[in-house]
Image (cartoon, rainbow, N blue to C red; front, top):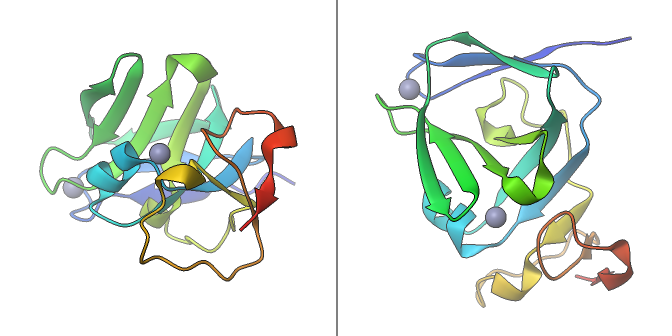
Length: 142
Ligand SMILES: [Zn+2]
Ligand SMILES: [Zn+2]
């Protein structure tokens, strides 16, 4: 059963739809995500081509580092996605832009080496250094 999920930016100018399954749901602690979201961490889901589409509006894009593109609403500034050339064919949507942000709980923490020192995790999820595509052998307890 393929239930679609909808999401939108804060002001509603940009609306999108995603179709599970998602490749992964992870909570990222990297500085780029922190800056894009102005938050200590963010949870996002990876979606293959064809599993997402814009329903309304066009996001603005920004190259946050070589090969990494981030999309956001040009009207309200809401962060929406990021894509990396290292993970071709995948677009990552921040779950907080979904109408139901609880639909895809994170399975692990990534880029844990960049976690802010005052942020204390107690969710029992595994954590790894580096981005989501890193080998699972590097998993360690959070
Ligand atoms: Zn907006
Ligand atoms: Zn990140």
